Image (cartoon, rainbow over all chains, first blue to last red; front, side, top):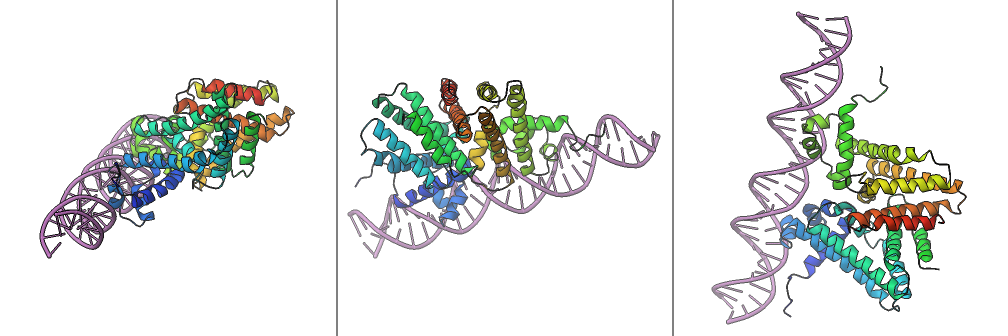
Length: 190
Length: 190
DNA sequence: CTATAGCACGAACGTTCGTGCGGTACGCTG
DNA sequence: CAGCGTACCGCACGAACGTTCGTGCTATAG
C-alpha cells in the first residue's frame, strides 16, 4: 500500500493514544515531550522525531482526540435513525464516554477549549474546529428532528455535558451525569 | 493602625489584580512569575517575595478572583429580595460580568476548574471551594424561591454560564450569552 | 543623626523545557 | 552482499522556569 502521507503507523498511534489521555489531565501545554517519552519508555528525541515540533504534536493530539470521539460516539450512533433518535444516542454515548473515563482526565475538549480559547494560533483553530463540528452535528440532527431553533438545542445539550464534566471531576458529584441526563431529556422534550 | 494580618496593601493587590486576568487567559500554571513581573515592571524576586512560593501565588490569585466575583456580582445582588429575584439578579450580573470582560480571558473559574480538576492538592481544593460556594449560594436562593430540586436548578444555571463562556470565547458566537439567558429564563420558569 | 524595618532589586542556582545533531540497529531492494 | 531508508537513541544547546541570596534604597522611630 502506498499510504498517502504520514508514515509509521503503530508507534505514532501509540504515542497519540497516550498523548490524548495525558493532555486531558495535564492540558495541551502541560503535555510534555519528556513526560510522554518516559511514559512510553522512549527517548525524548524518539518521540520528537515523529512530529518535528511541539505544536505539531498538539495538533496531532487534537486530531486523535477527535478520532476517538468519532469512533466511540459518532460512529456507533449512526445505527440510530436520523433526527431525534440519533440526537438522543449522541447524548447517551457521549455522557457514557465521559462517565466511563473515555478520556483519562475528564473531557478533553472542555480542557483544551478552556486552555486555548484566548490564544490565537493553529492550536486554537484546531480545537475550535473540533468543537464546531460536534456542535454542528448536534444542531443538524436537531433540525432533522424538527425542533425549533436547533442551535439553541445544541447549545443546551453541550452546556449540560460541560456542567456534568465539571461537577463530576472537580466537585466529585456522583449525581452530575444524572443531572445532565435530566436536563437533556427536558431539552429534547421527554 | 495595627492592620490585623496581611501587610503591604497596594503592591500586593496590584499584583493580584493582574494575576487574576493573566491566569484567566494563560491558566494558573501558565501564570508565570517572570511574566507577571515584566507586566508590572517589577523584578521576579520583587513579585516572588510577596508570596514565598508559586503555589501561594496561585492560592492568593484564586482568592482574589473570588473577591472580584463577590464585589461585582454577589454584593450588588444583595439589594434584590431573597429567592427568585436574587437568583435572577445573580445570573444577570454574572453573565454581564463575563460579557463585559470582567475577566480578561474568559471565566476564571471555568479555566481554573478545567486545569486543576484532576490534580489533587491545595490549589484544586481552593478552586473547588470557590465553585462550591457559588453553586451553594445559587441552590440556596433556588430553595428560598420554592423551586423543586434546587441543586438541579443550580446545576442548570451554572452549565448555561459555562456553555456561554465557551461559545463566546472559543467559537466567537455573539449570540452565546443570549442563548444562556434564554436557557436560564426557562429553567427559572419565565 | 543613627538605627531599624520593609520593599524591591540583580545575579545566580539547579531543573526542565523544546529543539537540533550525529550515530546505530534493522529491513528492504538492487 | 552492498547500499539505503526508516526508526530510534544519546547527547548537548539555549531559554525559561521557580527559588535563594545578598544588597540598596526609603521612611519611620528613638
